[in-house]
Amino acid sequence: MMKRNHNRLDEMQELRLLKLEGIGQWLFFWGLTAAIIIQILFIPDCSFQTIAGESIVLITACIALLIASIRKGIWSRTFAPSLKTNLVISILTGALYTVINYFRYHDRNDLQNSSHLSSFIISNFITMFILVLVVLTILSLLCEKRNKKLNSESNQDP
Amino acid sequence: MGKNIAIKTARAARDLTQKELADKIGITRQTMNAIEQGDYNPTIKLCRLICSALGKSLDDLFGEETEVHDETKS
Image 1 (cartoon, rainbow over the protein chains, first blue to last red):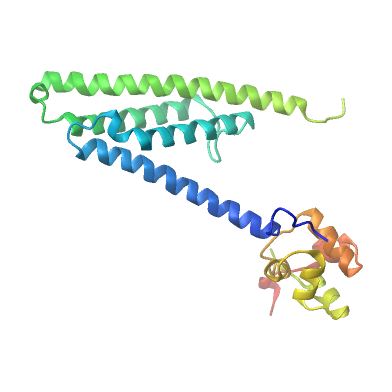
Image 2: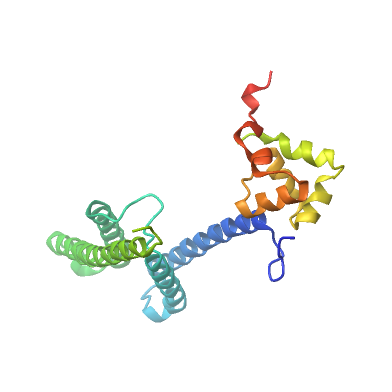
């Protein structure tokens, strides 16, 4: 008889629940992200204290998931860790960060000047682009290294 | 994945309902039905439990010839 001591579910129910939990995880992730962005955009003089709760939860969960995935040598369902995908993600993140910051600060006097505005946009974009690219590059190298180690440790006949 | 007629036939030969077979193995009737309908691929562990409960081999119940695909039905 199949053991169901600590788990009331059979294997099919367990797989279904895992899928539902996965969906829930993404709802929490995007919900928290949206809550942070909305507060940044619509609360005047929004400081870190305002979004501290959501930020800490989101960052902690992301770091935990990232560490767990890299330890298993898993990067993504659809993308292999590569410079091309890292560049695309860095560009998109840089653009999003720039847009959010623009809407946050667009009524500042110095941004009415087009040259200041250009500098603002370029500096915001480049800062975030470089930061994300560096982080993604380091993480993807770690993931590849871990993957190689896991595959070399598997039980294989010499 | 097609329906698993072999399991249904073997179960009927032993005069077992889906619920009775499921209880014997330790799974839900829902899962047993999903396996017979071809909606769920059981693990090898569960396959062996089903075979043991029905007194059949893996080939008898889960071999390729046991699948019935809808498109072959007339």
